[in-house]
Image (cartoon, rainbow, N blue to C red; front, side, top):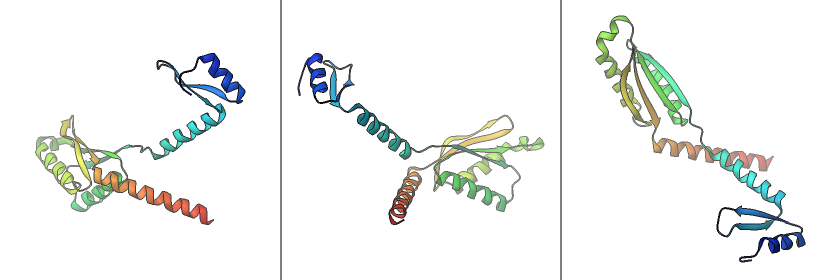
Length: 168
């Protein structure tokens, strides 16, 4: 409609039984729209809910290892960490030392690098292993490829759910 005075815009809105809504009130001149306010708010809320659905929630998971760990136990824990990473979560990995094990922290670093190598195909190290008290702590997060696969899986499941709803 172009630039119109506020009184004139209000009169036009009243004639059409609609509302005058300020879209960008801080602009110069302010930008307004003549719409049905109830419908406008409903559509706006619907868009926000849809955006929220597509948003990924990243959780922090944690896995603790002991320095004296058997190969099978290590593999089992690594599988669990892999599942965490493939579902899009960050993981805090902790290797704890007890008693005399503190004298051999280099073995803890070796174990940390073994874990990192085992999970390097699905994750990257976001903070390098470092000693914190009696624990060796480091963080891993999923790679972009892993997140991409996760998104594809979710999209596929959404399509499947939509098709199931339609067929029933």
